[in-house]
Image 1 (cartoon, rainbow, N blue to C red):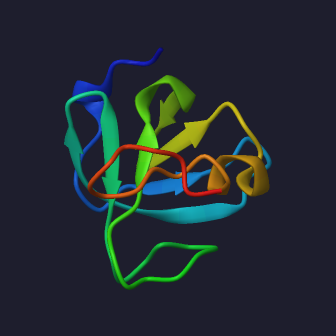
Image 2: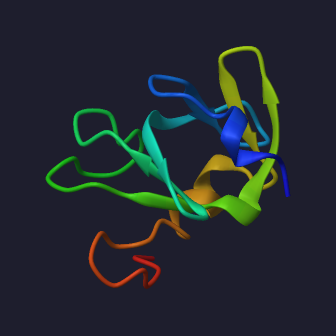
Length: 86
């Protein structure tokens, strides 16, 4: 897993295929919290979280995941429970 302490607010989150998934709000523990306004491929009425284990690396101002965007979107976690949405 990449060093999550290198992830900053407003960084773009992209899948392994380069497709935009969202924008970082902040890192909470071992999860990346995405902004509500930019949840990429899903609805924006609440925050989505990405498990930190999906982070393949940080490239400039982008957080690249180890999974393609469509797969990663299915692994978004719910705000309260931490359970996968998809």
